[in-house]
Image 1 (cartoon, rainbow, N blue to C red):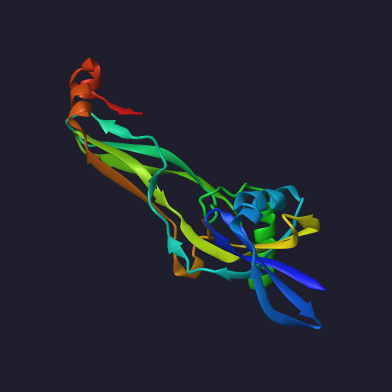
Image 2: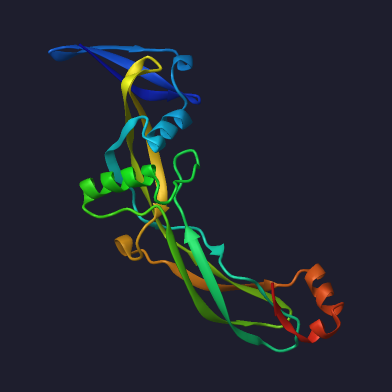
Length: 224
């Protein structure tokens, strides 16, 4: 009997390793050329469509960390000579990406397979996306611009995708490719908390000139 596995990647092609077994696995491993194998994108497309029977094996959760801050509201411009206080609404949606920066579709088959693997290994669910919205009071000084930024607690999920075909594809029944998925983690994971802050900066010369050229706008606070 012959057990065929791919576990390496060279360039953009997956490299296959074949291991012969008679009762116990023999140690001989024969790599095929990179041109003989599928691309990572082809394997993952077959996982997503169901053409390949896929599982994420050897799942490992990375350490939780706070992601980068990004603007989640409109900007408030203060063209007046007094501080401007205003309540601003914000909303944010954070998704997941794989090792090559591809997005994980919310509710898709890949997201479901990752959740199954994480749940089986760590006994808690995994979500490919997180959405949140609220409002926050902010004060912007004269000649400044203010906005709301938010940072999401993130965590990686690492493992190896196993793709099994009923009939040989690219010459083999099984293909393997390593992956690391980065996505949102629940607030409070490993003591890390989401953060929402108000940020401000001085207006640029162009923005200041726009205030001066705006007639009544020179004495206004506006959002854009």
